[in-house]
Structures are given as C-alpha cells and as structure tokens.
Image (cartoon, rainbow, N blue to C red):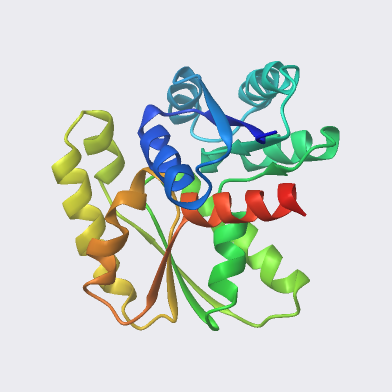
Length: 218
C-alpha cells in the first residue's frame, strides 16, 4: 500500500515546489495538502512566532494527524518551535522543512550559504543550522543572506521580481561550499542559482522528500 503523507503549508507558494519534488523523487506516495495562509500573515504582523500563532499552527497539524497518515512534512520554515512540539507528539515521521537540506549541506563542506527571502525565516534557520552542526561536532561557517524585498514581491504576485532578487542575491554566496535555498518557494530557482556558482545548490523540497521516503521505506 502506498505511503500517505500530509503536507502542512502556511503559504500557497510552497505547494507546487513540494508536489514537483514528490513527482520526481517519490511518485508512488499519496500526499495531500493542508493550507492556512493566515498563519504567515499573522507572523508577518507579529514580527516573531508568538504563542497564539504557535497554537493555531499546532491545531492544524493535529487535524492532519487524525487522518490516518504515515508521515507529515511541514513546508513553512518560520514555525520551527511549533514543529518541534509536533515532532515530540507524533509517532510517525514528522519533518521540518529544512532539516534534510541542512544535513545535505553539511555533507558538502564547512562554508555554508543560507539564502532566504523572509526575514523571520532567516534568523530561525541560521540558529537551527548552527545547532545541527554543533550536534554533529562540526565547526562550520554559516553565511546567512536575505534577498531583500523578494518576499514582498512574492506576496504581491510579482513572481518575476521575486525570482530576480533571489538570483542576484545568491551571487553574494559564491565562495561557499553549498548554498541552501531556505524556503520551498525558492526551489524552482535551483538551476538558475546553480548556473551562477561553483557551490552546490540544495533546495528544501527535494531533500525533504528524499529523507521522508527513506524513513518510511526503512
């Protein structure tokens, strides 16, 4: 029987990239999406992850967990602490959006570029990557870089402007061993970013689906 995976989204921009990743990496899996765009809007308004937003996020995950699934994948990077609550609670594999990407990045070298378009996301992910490196006994240099204004362009529906800002910003990470595209919405730009650098470019969705498949099939 095919594995059943719930995908939890706080922005619709993450849906197509992760569905494309499933099609390419694990087409046999059955996956479905649960979206609450209001979470991202509330986070933008608050400026950081407050308890009320975390509780709302966890309620969404609880709903998905009650639908007889084999695994859960979150696609929104700014809700790390709330996701950790879910990971401690659920018995099936429950993945943060970027943990698999971090692992692949650490396998590539000691200088890691972290590229994001959402300011809150960048701060949270830098901390998460640093913790993972420490747990693995790795002394790495993390270079976080924000594609300024790209998130606002994406929210306004100006995809081309968003993409150009991300691609141009990535050029500032050319000296890294790996460049991690921190948000699922950036995954379609992997090849465009890769064409301008010798660093290995890693996107969240494909790394996450590869790890989820390994966990389920194991």
